[in-house]
Amino acid sequence: MSLWHVIVLSIIQGMAELLPVSSSAHVVVAEKLMGMDPTAPAMTLLLVMLHTGTMFAVIVYFWRQWGQTYFRDGQTFRTIVLQLIAATFATAVIGGGLIEGIEKFGFPHAKHAEIEQLFGRLDLIAPALAAAGILILLAGLRRREVARKTMDHDGTGLTMRQSIWIGAVQGLCLPFRGFSRSGATISTGMLMDVRRARAEEFSFALAVILTPPAIAREVLRLMKAQHITGAENLASAMGPSLLGAFFAFLAGLVALKWLSRWLETGKWWWFGVYCLVAASVVFWLHLRGF
Image (cartoon, rainbow, N blue to C red; front, side, top):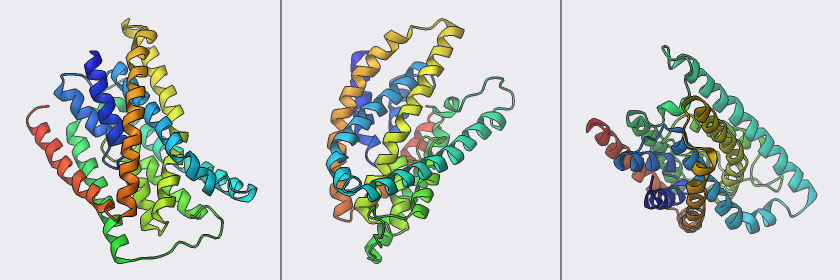
């Protein structure tokens, strides 16, 4: 994998990760078009490290907003912490259960099956993209027709029930490349009458919590693969990944400004249209043998 490949993948990841269009789907397609194996441990580690870059972009971009919303007083801070814990628990239960079930029953003839073995399947990515597109369209078009204000009794802009539902939907996204995490969680919040800005802030707060365990999983997976196959050492694999994380950070800041502007101006549903078009393209590539 050349430096040019890393930079291209970083920009794609940084832009697509923080837009509701599934960065994983875009990166997997780009890797296939460049002749790479998206399921290889080094490639999945690169993808997770690119997520690290976008995680820091999220922290930098939302830090002031989180301060104004979540850290303004002790009661609000305690409430959001409990909501984030509850949502993350729902993610772990739903997402962990799905991954465990797929690894156990989805590979009947494999002894050491891993969910990552499905990440290069364009025939699975296409319907996941379509599902995300439909959810985004429903949320975006409904918000244009129905203007409701969220009751903000607890200061965070959403209730415990809403936060748990958002976390559960995030869990559904984990095993499926193409089912945009940000698109699904923000859309779920909007469909439950959470204000756009609050849904966006909460979605990306959850992303910051989710990223470190994902990185740890892929590092352990890479180390295990090295032991079995004698592949390149961890340091050489981390080098390109760290460079990619930097470029993903820069691209992520640009994407977040774009996302916030379209949310504020009611253009959220356009992302749904894009996902449906992208799903058609991905399925066409699958038929072409990619």
